[in-house]
Amino acid sequence: MCRMGADTMSDPAQAALIALLRKRRRRMIGLMSGTSADGLDLALVDVQDSRGGPEFKVRAVETLFYPSAMRKCIHDLMDSAVCEYETLVRMHYRWAEFAAGAVRGFLRTRSIPAHTVDALASHGQTVAHYPVWKPFHGGGSRGTLQIGDPAVLARLSGLPTIGDFRWSDIAAGGTGAPLSGYYHHLMLSRLAKPGIRQLPPAVLNIGGMANISISRGAIPKLTVIAFDTGPGNCLSDTMMRLWGKRSYDRNGNLAARGRVERTTLTKMLHHPYLRRRPPKSCGKEEFGAQFITRLYRNAPKNSAALADRLATANELVACSIAGGQKWLGKIGGVVVTGGGRHNRQLMERIGRQFAPTPLISCDYLGLPGDFIEAIGFALLAHETLAGRAGNLGGATGGAPAILGKLCLPR
Ligand SMILES: Nc1ncnc2c1ncn2[C@@H]1O[C@H](COP(=O)(O)OP(=O)(O)O)[C@@H](O)[C@H]1O
Ligand SMILES: [Mg+2]
Image 1 (spheres, protein in one colour):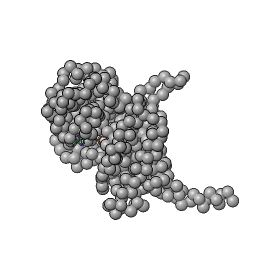
Image 2 (tube, rainbow, N blue to C red):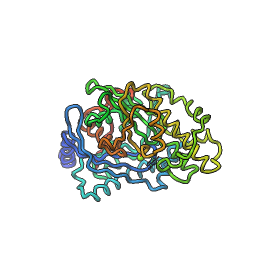
Image 3 (tube, protein in one colour):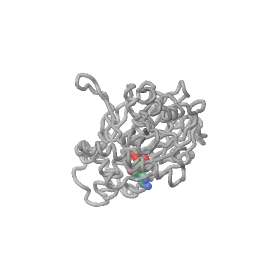
Image 4 (cartoon, helix red, strand yellow):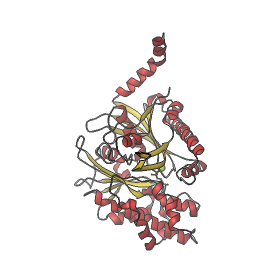
């Protein structure tokens, strides 16, 4: 009796699960929101097994910006002085509900039937990140927290969902971030790279934080160096939110009118994170609002003073990215991804730091630069379903690990 009951309940679900695991081609949707918490990036990606790692085609992309109250709430959750448990737990559910709605809308507007999608790959929304190992209550600990529960997302979207990628790397002894090194490798190894053939290019992603990666060799002898260089857009975004009544400095227009405050820049550059060797990753814990308010006790007197502060913050970003070069070895170019590449003033400062090494926009290589992370997590989830590790190359310090947790819709 008991066996019959189990069979009638689980057979179709079990068959679907086995079929999902056995597939060699999958249609995935990657979902990503970084520390900027500007919105949810979605990428529909067809992925296929191939020698040397999966091949992929990006079919559609979209960003669903967070409503401004939700964005503020998420930024508050990232600030340990303001975060409340009830809001945190409720947002863990609401983010998943928001993402499920985003997936449904994304498919509906493109007339793509949901049953043609194999699985969702959800990074979630990072609200806290403590990657450094510390003695803790008689043992040791490190950790990270991405909200947006994958079980809720699976149930509400009707699609198998892989989430919580970073914990698998942490469990394997890694820092949990950045995981971008391996998927940057998978992406670049498929591309013709005009003008950067002699030496491997680094990939620089400028989101809320900035990370850089470089890979050499191929599986099974792949080596990847990838680490957060420090802040990305988060400093100028926070300044604009605090003092500019805007969420970011569009195209870097205001920063372009400012002058770098050298004394403050020197103080900023003393941050111990910037001198630490990789593997390393950072977050709002190091470069949040308190980093800014400790340096600037008062609001700027006028927009010229705000422009100087923005120029100084962008100079810190450029210097800290360039400072990371010493851990990369020789590079043939820097492929730039993420929202920061729209900030012309910031890109000009970074370009100066790297000259004569060229900066190359990711879009020039045929990849949509605002969606690299969403595409990347779709690739990692495909690897997970195939039973392959997603943190190869050793960048985080973790042993090879199959990343994430699989949640089923029923
Ligand atoms: N036109 C633009 N000009 C200047 N900055 C921009 C522009 N568009 C986006 N950004 C910056 O990019 C950020 C979002 O980048 P994104 O790659 O999504 O970061 P994250 O991964 O942290 O969410 C915004 O918060 C903003 O700082
Ligand atoms: Mg974003």
